[in-house]
Image (cartoon, rainbow, N blue to C red; front, side):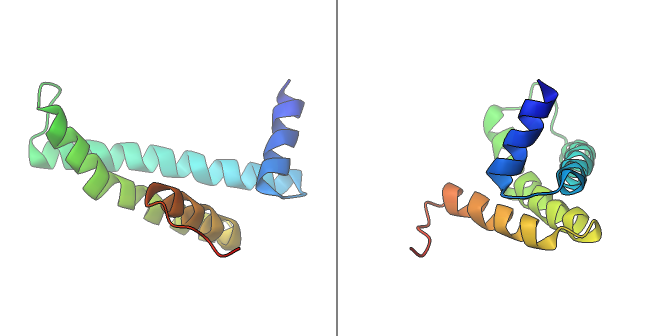
Length: 104
């Protein structure tokens, strides 16, 4: 089952190497954990708690956490030698969020 998932990632991301898949997954993991920690620190700094209004939490996420995640993803991806992959990944991510049509 893992082999099938692994091959599907390689196909979806258009990469050949198992090593490259592993490096990309490590970059996503490092980015996720770092973002969780930064999100926690930002919430503490701004005084946001569990019972804070949802709109405050959503605004912090959209305005602060989402850009930080993408910056960290580029940093970790670049440090791990996958700049080209993550550049394309982030461009595709933002084009989907902002409904930007790419060149055909």
